Image 1 (cartoon, helix red, strand yellow):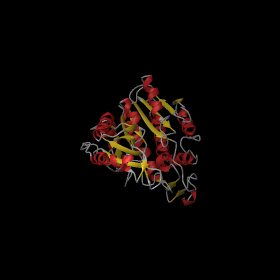
Image 2 (tube, helix red, strand yellow):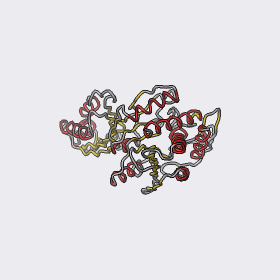
Image 3 (cartoon, helix red, strand yellow):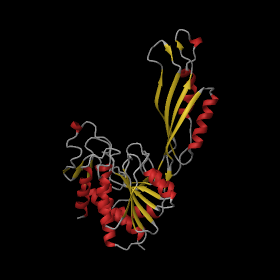
Image 4 (tube, one colour):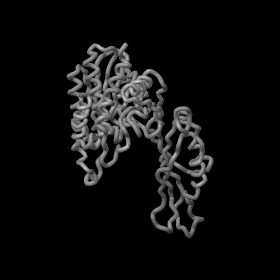
Amino acid sequence: MMKKEVVNLAQQLIQRPSISPDDQGCQQLIAQRLEKLGFTLEWLPFNDTLNLWAKHGNTSPVIAFAGHTDVVPVGDESQWDYPPFSAKIIDDMLYGRGAADMKGSLAAMVIAAEEYIKNNPNHQGTVAFLITSDEEAAAKDGTVRVVETLMARNEKIDYCLVGEPSSTAELGDIIKNGRRGSITGNLYIQGIQGHVAYPALADNPVHKAIPFLLELTTYQWDNGNDFFPPTSLQIANIQAGTGANNVIPGELYIQFNLRYCTEVDDQIIKSTVEKMLKKHHLSYRIDWNLSGKPFLTKPGKLVNSAITSLQEVADITPKLDTSGGTSDGRFIALMGAEVIELGPLNRTIHKVNECVSCQHLGVLAQVYQRILERILDK
Protein backbone atom coordinates (compact mmCIF):
# COMPACT_ATOMS: atom_id res chain seq x y z
CA MET A 1 0.00 0.00 0.00
CA MET A 2 2.79 2.41 0.92
CA LYS A 3 4.61 1.70 -2.35
CA LYS A 4 1.50 2.47 -4.41
CA GLU A 5 0.93 5.78 -2.61
CA VAL A 6 4.55 6.86 -2.94
CA VAL A 7 4.71 6.03 -6.65
CA ASN A 8 1.41 7.80 -7.33
CA LEU A 9 2.62 10.99 -5.64
CA ALA A 10 6.02 10.77 -7.36
CA GLN A 11 4.24 10.52 -10.73
CA GLN A 12 2.17 13.61 -9.98
CA LEU A 13 5.32 15.55 -9.10
CA ILE A 14 7.28 14.36 -12.16
CA GLN A 15 4.42 15.35 -14.47
CA ARG A 16 4.97 18.98 -13.46
CA PRO A 17 7.88 20.32 -15.58
CA SER A 18 9.55 22.21 -12.77
CA ILE A 19 12.77 23.33 -14.46
CA SER A 20 14.72 25.29 -11.84
CA PRO A 21 13.56 27.57 -10.29
CA ASP A 22 9.97 27.25 -11.60
CA ASP A 23 8.13 25.05 -9.09
CA GLN A 24 5.12 24.46 -11.40
CA GLY A 25 2.79 23.68 -8.49
CA CYS A 26 4.82 20.84 -6.95
CA GLN A 27 5.04 22.46 -3.54
CA GLN A 28 1.34 23.29 -3.58
CA LEU A 29 0.58 19.63 -4.19
CA ILE A 30 2.72 18.62 -1.22
CA ALA A 31 1.36 21.44 0.94
CA GLN A 32 -2.24 20.30 0.40
CA ARG A 33 -1.40 16.86 1.73
CA LEU A 34 0.55 18.22 4.69
CA GLU A 35 -2.22 20.67 5.57
CA LYS A 36 -4.71 17.79 5.78
CA LEU A 37 -2.41 16.21 8.37
CA GLY A 38 -2.48 19.36 10.50
CA PHE A 39 0.82 20.89 9.39
CA THR A 40 1.24 24.64 9.77
CA LEU A 41 2.36 26.02 6.41
CA GLU A 42 4.59 29.03 5.83
CA TRP A 43 5.41 30.20 2.33
CA LEU A 44 8.79 31.93 2.00
CA PRO A 45 9.23 33.18 -1.57
CA PHE A 46 12.42 35.04 -2.47
CA ASN A 47 12.65 36.59 -5.92
CA ASP A 48 11.68 33.85 -8.41
CA THR A 49 12.14 31.00 -5.91
CA LEU A 50 9.31 29.43 -3.93
CA ASN A 51 10.07 27.87 -0.57
CA LEU A 52 7.86 25.99 1.87
CA TRP A 53 8.45 25.62 5.61
CA ALA A 54 5.87 23.31 7.18
CA LYS A 55 5.65 22.01 10.76
CA HIS A 56 3.61 19.47 12.69
CA GLY A 57 4.14 20.05 16.40
CA ASN A 58 5.91 22.89 18.20
CA THR A 59 8.29 21.27 20.67
CA SER A 60 11.80 19.89 20.44
CA PRO A 61 13.41 17.96 18.97
CA VAL A 62 12.74 19.17 15.43
CA ILE A 63 13.39 16.68 12.66
CA ALA A 64 13.13 18.14 9.16
CA PHE A 65 12.79 16.49 5.79
CA ALA A 66 14.59 18.69 3.25
CA GLY A 67 14.41 18.56 -0.51
CA HIS A 68 13.90 20.40 -3.78
CA THR A 69 11.14 20.32 -6.35
CA ASP A 70 13.21 21.83 -9.17
CA VAL A 71 14.93 19.70 -11.79
CA VAL A 72 17.62 20.23 -14.40
CA PRO A 73 16.67 20.71 -18.07
CA VAL A 74 15.88 17.54 -20.04
CA GLY A 75 18.22 18.27 -22.97
CA ASP A 76 17.31 16.72 -26.30
CA GLU A 77 13.90 15.12 -25.72
CA SER A 78 14.33 12.91 -28.79
CA GLN A 79 17.04 11.02 -26.90
CA TRP A 80 14.55 9.92 -24.23
CA ASP A 81 12.76 6.59 -24.61
CA TYR A 82 9.68 8.12 -22.98
CA PRO A 83 8.64 11.78 -22.66
CA PRO A 84 10.62 13.15 -19.69
CA PHE A 85 7.55 14.46 -17.87
CA SER A 86 5.20 11.57 -18.63
CA ALA A 87 6.22 9.58 -15.51
CA LYS A 88 5.93 6.26 -17.33
CA ILE A 89 6.33 3.01 -15.38
CA ILE A 90 8.06 0.23 -17.30
CA ASP A 91 9.07 -3.01 -15.57
CA ASP A 92 8.59 -1.40 -12.15
CA MET A 93 10.90 1.49 -13.05
CA LEU A 94 9.51 5.03 -12.89
CA TYR A 95 10.95 7.20 -15.67
CA GLY A 96 11.11 10.98 -15.82
CA ARG A 97 13.19 14.01 -15.09
CA GLY A 98 13.46 14.29 -11.31
CA ALA A 99 12.47 10.68 -10.63
CA ALA A 100 15.72 10.06 -8.72
CA ASP A 101 16.77 13.67 -8.10
CA MET A 102 14.66 14.13 -6.13
CA LYS A 103 10.91 13.92 -6.55
CA GLY A 104 10.89 10.24 -5.65
CA SER A 105 12.48 11.03 -2.30
CA LEU A 106 10.06 13.89 -1.67
CA ALA A 107 7.12 11.57 -2.30
CA ALA A 108 8.59 8.98 0.09
CA MET A 109 9.09 11.65 2.75
CA VAL A 110 5.50 12.88 2.49
CA ILE A 111 4.03 9.38 2.68
CA ALA A 112 6.33 8.50 5.59
CA ALA A 113 5.16 11.61 7.48
CA GLU A 114 1.52 10.76 6.72
CA GLU A 115 1.87 7.23 8.07
CA TYR A 116 3.78 8.32 11.13
CA ILE A 117 1.38 11.11 12.09
CA LYS A 118 -1.71 8.96 11.50
CA ASN A 119 -0.23 6.45 13.93
CA ASN A 120 1.12 9.10 16.32
CA PRO A 121 -1.17 12.17 16.14
CA ASN A 122 0.14 13.45 19.50
CA HIS A 123 3.81 12.68 18.88
CA GLN A 124 6.66 14.25 20.79
CA GLY A 125 8.74 16.92 19.08
CA THR A 126 8.17 18.42 15.64
CA VAL A 127 8.11 16.98 12.13
CA ALA A 128 9.07 19.63 9.57
CA PHE A 129 9.50 20.01 5.82
CA LEU A 130 11.90 22.47 4.19
CA ILE A 131 11.30 22.45 0.46
CA THR A 132 12.84 24.75 -2.14
CA SER A 133 12.81 25.17 -5.92
CA ASP A 134 16.32 26.47 -6.66
CA GLU A 135 18.74 23.75 -5.57
CA GLU A 136 19.65 22.81 -9.14
CA ALA A 137 20.37 26.38 -10.24
CA ALA A 138 21.76 29.37 -8.38
CA ALA A 139 20.95 28.07 -4.87
CA LYS A 140 20.79 31.70 -3.75
CA ASP A 141 17.13 32.22 -2.84
CA GLY A 142 16.18 28.79 -1.59
CA THR A 143 17.31 26.81 1.43
CA VAL A 144 20.02 29.32 2.35
CA ARG A 145 17.42 32.12 2.62
CA VAL A 146 15.00 29.94 4.60
CA VAL A 147 17.79 29.01 7.02
CA GLU A 148 18.69 32.69 7.44
CA THR A 149 15.03 33.46 8.18
CA LEU A 150 14.72 30.67 10.75
CA MET A 151 17.98 31.55 12.47
CA ALA A 152 16.99 35.23 12.67
CA ARG A 153 13.96 34.26 14.74
CA ASN A 154 15.84 31.62 16.75
CA GLU A 155 14.06 28.63 15.26
CA LYS A 156 16.09 25.46 15.37
CA ILE A 157 16.39 22.23 13.41
CA ASP A 158 17.92 19.44 15.47
CA TYR A 159 17.97 16.69 12.86
CA CYS A 160 17.67 16.94 9.10
CA LEU A 161 17.25 14.24 6.49
CA VAL A 162 17.98 15.40 2.93
CA GLY A 163 16.53 13.19 0.22
CA GLU A 164 19.38 13.51 -2.28
CA PRO A 165 20.09 10.27 -4.21
CA SER A 166 22.93 8.90 -2.08
CA SER A 167 22.81 5.20 -2.98
CA THR A 168 25.24 3.78 -5.54
CA ALA A 169 24.92 0.02 -6.16
CA GLU A 170 22.09 -0.92 -3.78
CA LEU A 171 19.39 1.08 -2.07
CA GLY A 172 20.77 2.34 1.23
CA ASP A 173 24.37 1.29 0.68
CA ILE A 174 25.58 4.87 1.26
CA ILE A 175 24.60 7.55 3.76
CA LYS A 176 26.16 10.93 3.13
CA ASN A 177 27.01 12.29 6.56
CA GLY A 178 28.97 15.29 5.37
CA ARG A 179 30.21 17.14 2.33
CA ARG A 180 33.38 18.92 1.35
CA GLY A 181 33.48 22.68 1.06
CA SER A 182 33.69 24.30 -2.37
CA ILE A 183 35.49 27.53 -3.22
CA THR A 184 36.32 28.95 -6.66
CA GLY A 185 39.04 31.43 -7.52
CA ASN A 186 38.71 33.66 -10.59
CA LEU A 187 42.25 34.90 -11.12
CA TYR A 188 43.40 37.59 -13.55
CA ILE A 189 47.17 37.93 -14.03
CA GLN A 190 48.25 41.15 -15.73
CA GLY A 191 50.96 41.53 -18.35
CA ILE A 192 51.62 43.90 -21.25
CA GLN A 193 50.21 43.15 -24.69
CA GLY A 194 52.55 43.36 -27.65
CA HIS A 195 53.85 41.89 -30.89
CA VAL A 196 55.39 38.43 -30.65
CA ALA A 197 58.32 39.64 -32.74
CA TYR A 198 59.15 42.30 -30.13
CA PRO A 199 58.96 40.50 -26.77
CA ALA A 200 61.15 43.10 -25.09
CA LEU A 201 58.31 45.60 -25.53
CA ALA A 202 55.72 43.31 -23.92
CA ASP A 203 55.29 41.21 -20.78
CA ASN A 204 53.70 37.78 -21.31
CA PRO A 205 51.50 36.86 -18.31
CA VAL A 206 51.30 33.22 -19.42
CA HIS A 207 55.05 32.77 -19.18
CA LYS A 208 55.18 34.61 -15.87
CA ALA A 209 52.42 32.45 -14.39
CA ILE A 210 53.90 29.03 -15.16
CA PRO A 211 55.98 28.69 -11.94
CA PHE A 212 52.99 29.83 -9.90
CA LEU A 213 50.68 27.34 -11.63
CA LEU A 214 53.12 24.53 -11.00
CA GLU A 215 53.16 25.34 -7.29
CA LEU A 216 49.38 25.84 -7.14
CA THR A 217 48.59 22.50 -8.76
CA THR A 218 51.12 20.46 -6.76
CA TYR A 219 50.59 22.04 -3.35
CA GLN A 220 49.60 19.54 -0.63
CA TRP A 221 46.82 21.21 1.33
CA ASP A 222 46.29 18.42 3.85
CA ASN A 223 46.10 14.66 4.22
CA GLY A 224 42.37 14.49 4.82
CA ASN A 225 41.06 12.73 7.92
CA ASP A 226 38.90 9.82 9.03
CA PHE A 227 35.84 11.31 7.34
CA PHE A 228 37.20 13.25 4.34
CA PRO A 229 39.69 12.68 1.52
CA PRO A 230 42.49 15.25 1.10
CA THR A 231 41.59 18.66 -0.26
CA SER A 232 41.63 18.70 -4.07
CA LEU A 233 42.35 21.62 -6.43
CA GLN A 234 41.49 21.56 -10.12
CA ILE A 235 41.93 24.20 -12.80
CA ALA A 236 38.64 24.52 -14.66
CA ASN A 237 39.34 27.23 -17.25
CA ILE A 238 42.30 29.13 -18.71
CA GLN A 239 42.03 31.91 -21.26
CA ALA A 240 44.51 34.37 -22.79
CA GLY A 241 45.26 36.09 -26.06
CA THR A 242 43.27 37.65 -28.86
CA GLY A 243 43.13 34.58 -31.07
CA ALA A 244 45.90 35.89 -33.32
CA ASN A 245 49.22 34.06 -33.43
CA ASN A 246 51.29 37.24 -33.48
CA VAL A 247 49.96 38.93 -30.34
CA ILE A 248 51.39 38.50 -26.86
CA PRO A 249 48.41 38.51 -24.45
CA GLY A 250 48.00 41.29 -21.95
CA GLU A 251 46.07 39.24 -19.41
CA LEU A 252 45.75 35.60 -18.33
CA TYR A 253 42.50 34.36 -16.79
CA ILE A 254 42.59 31.23 -14.65
CA GLN A 255 39.58 29.70 -12.89
CA PHE A 256 40.22 27.02 -10.29
CA ASN A 257 38.13 25.21 -7.73
CA LEU A 258 38.97 23.54 -4.45
CA ARG A 259 36.88 20.84 -2.80
CA TYR A 260 38.20 21.07 0.71
CA CYS A 261 37.87 19.08 3.90
CA THR A 262 37.62 20.17 7.51
CA GLU A 263 41.43 20.28 7.89
CA VAL A 264 41.49 23.73 6.23
CA ASP A 265 39.05 26.61 5.89
CA ASP A 266 38.33 29.22 3.24
CA GLN A 267 40.51 31.84 4.94
CA ILE A 268 43.53 29.52 4.93
CA ILE A 269 42.95 28.78 1.25
CA LYS A 270 42.69 32.44 0.29
CA SER A 271 45.77 33.52 2.22
CA THR A 272 47.87 30.60 0.94
CA VAL A 273 47.04 31.32 -2.71
CA GLU A 274 47.74 35.02 -2.32
CA LYS A 275 51.09 34.28 -0.66
CA MET A 276 51.98 32.16 -3.69
CA LEU A 277 51.03 34.97 -6.06
CA LYS A 278 53.17 37.48 -4.20
CA LYS A 279 56.05 35.01 -3.95
CA HIS A 280 56.13 34.78 -7.75
CA HIS A 281 55.91 38.59 -8.13
CA LEU A 282 52.72 38.55 -10.16
CA SER A 283 50.45 41.50 -10.77
CA TYR A 284 46.95 40.11 -10.26
CA ARG A 285 43.34 40.46 -9.26
CA ILE A 286 41.43 37.56 -7.73
CA ASP A 287 37.73 37.17 -7.01
CA TRP A 288 36.59 34.37 -4.70
CA ASN A 289 33.26 32.56 -4.69
CA LEU A 290 32.56 30.40 -1.63
CA SER A 291 29.78 27.97 -2.60
CA GLY A 292 29.65 26.22 0.75
CA LYS A 293 31.68 25.28 3.78
CA PRO A 294 32.30 21.64 4.68
CA PHE A 295 30.01 19.96 7.18
CA LEU A 296 30.16 16.69 9.05
CA THR A 297 27.65 14.76 11.13
CA LYS A 298 29.48 12.24 13.27
CA PRO A 299 27.75 9.04 14.39
CA GLY A 300 25.02 10.00 16.85
CA LYS A 301 21.27 9.77 17.14
CA LEU A 302 20.43 10.59 13.51
CA VAL A 303 23.17 8.53 11.89
CA ASN A 304 22.53 5.58 14.19
CA SER A 305 18.76 5.78 13.63
CA ALA A 306 19.26 5.73 9.87
CA ILE A 307 21.67 2.79 10.00
CA THR A 308 19.38 0.71 12.21
CA SER A 309 16.32 1.55 10.08
CA LEU A 310 18.10 0.48 6.89
CA GLN A 311 19.24 -2.75 8.52
CA GLU A 312 15.69 -3.58 9.60
CA VAL A 313 13.79 -2.52 6.49
CA ALA A 314 16.27 -3.03 3.64
CA ASP A 315 18.56 -5.63 5.21
CA ILE A 316 21.64 -3.56 4.44
CA THR A 317 24.31 -1.89 6.56
CA PRO A 318 25.23 1.43 4.92
CA LYS A 319 28.64 3.00 4.61
CA LEU A 320 29.14 6.58 5.79
CA ASP A 321 30.57 8.73 3.01
CA THR A 322 31.38 12.40 2.32
CA SER A 323 32.47 12.22 -1.32
CA GLY A 324 30.85 13.85 -4.31
CA GLY A 325 29.55 17.36 -4.79
CA THR A 326 27.55 19.37 -2.34
CA SER A 327 23.89 19.82 -1.41
CA ASP A 328 21.57 22.13 0.51
CA GLY A 329 22.57 20.19 3.61
CA ARG A 330 25.53 22.58 3.86
CA PHE A 331 23.17 25.44 4.69
CA ILE A 332 21.11 23.51 7.22
CA ALA A 333 24.26 22.34 9.00
CA LEU A 334 24.97 25.99 9.84
CA MET A 335 22.06 25.77 12.31
CA GLY A 336 23.96 23.18 14.33
CA ALA A 337 21.72 20.40 13.05
CA GLU A 338 22.75 16.80 12.53
CA VAL A 339 22.39 16.36 8.76
CA ILE A 340 22.47 13.29 6.55
CA GLU A 341 21.55 12.57 2.94
CA LEU A 342 19.69 9.36 2.22
CA GLY A 343 17.91 8.61 -1.02
CA PRO A 344 17.62 6.31 -4.05
CA LEU A 345 20.29 5.21 -6.52
CA ASN A 346 22.16 8.02 -8.25
CA ARG A 347 23.20 6.19 -11.42
CA THR A 348 20.73 8.02 -13.72
CA ILE A 349 20.56 11.50 -12.15
CA HIS A 350 20.83 14.39 -14.64
CA LYS A 351 20.92 11.82 -17.47
CA VAL A 352 18.64 10.90 -20.34
CA ASN A 353 16.05 8.34 -19.19
CA GLU A 354 16.41 9.23 -15.51
CA CYS A 355 14.55 6.61 -13.51
CA VAL A 356 14.00 5.11 -10.09
CA SER A 357 12.78 1.73 -8.87
CA CYS A 358 9.19 1.81 -7.65
CA GLN A 359 10.04 -0.88 -5.13
CA HIS A 360 12.88 1.26 -3.80
CA LEU A 361 10.53 4.20 -3.29
CA GLY A 362 8.26 2.07 -1.14
CA VAL A 363 11.19 0.79 0.92
CA LEU A 364 12.57 4.32 1.26
CA ALA A 365 9.26 5.55 2.70
CA GLN A 366 9.37 2.78 5.30
CA VAL A 367 12.95 3.69 6.23
CA TYR A 368 12.03 7.36 6.60
CA GLN A 369 9.09 6.40 8.82
CA ARG A 370 11.32 4.25 11.03
CA ILE A 371 13.77 7.13 11.40
CA LEU A 372 10.93 9.38 12.56
CA GLU A 373 9.91 6.78 15.11
CA ARG A 374 13.43 6.45 16.48
CA ILE A 375 14.00 10.19 16.73
CA LEU A 376 10.65 11.19 18.22
CA ASP A 377 9.23 8.20 20.08
CA LYS A 378 10.22 7.71 23.69
